[in-house]
Image (cartoon, rainbow, N blue to C red; front, top):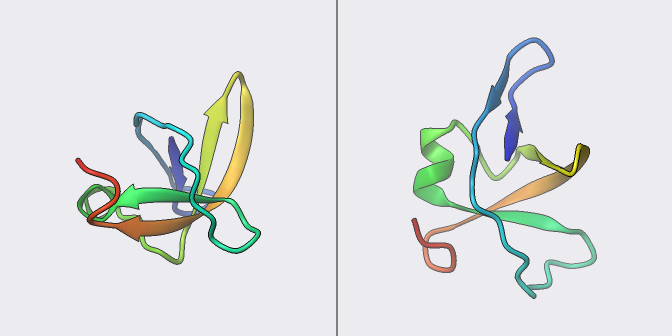
Length: 70
């Protein structure tokens, strides 16, 4: 998972991912554990980029401290 702070300053970290059947309206979102998000400077107002098979996908962030464990 890659997080974007600004165009000039991009932070990157690797995380495990899995598809979860949770509906958040019609938009796709990325659920991130609140503590992990805090450690990487991610807030619920951010967007994150996921890179898979050399393709980049951008998602809104939703934070949780119950559903996604550390």
